[in-house]
Length: 209
Image (cartoon, rainbow, N blue to C red; front, side, top):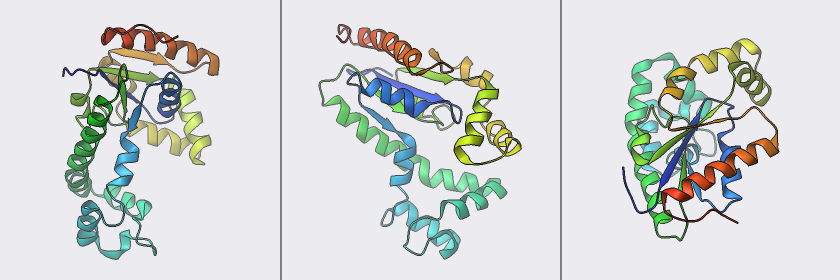
């Protein structure tokens, strides 16, 4: 993909620190859109995707206030692969369309490049929307520990969550750039600053001061 504004895709496994990295880029003036945020937007009350899900599964997937009951829907799609594929057919095209809208908004702004943050950058085909793919990588042991702590689950559950995702090896094999996120905050900031200089050069712009 080529465009006037370089788009950098950021992905990584659960608890790798994708949003933390995106916020570090934001402090350098770089805008970003998160596919997870868009995924929540497109199933909000009044959205066509939620209407379709409701028609298929009934009120059992709605909370009392009309919001999507994510846990109930997750239980359905985890138990039935066909239902997961159906849900993806409803949500993925809408997510992609709205991501394109946000990226077009960025292209109207005077910024050196922009970020698309997505845990399913490769699996969903969203990598087609970006010019380079940055994979945030962490050792699996650290990923499991962070997941258990963040989500309040035990180690076996955390391992199962990690195992259900694209393998670390496959994800890394598709990376244009890799950021190993196992250090402290300053180490992360230094690595992001180095990548920022590289990405600014893609658009022929000088490094940030």
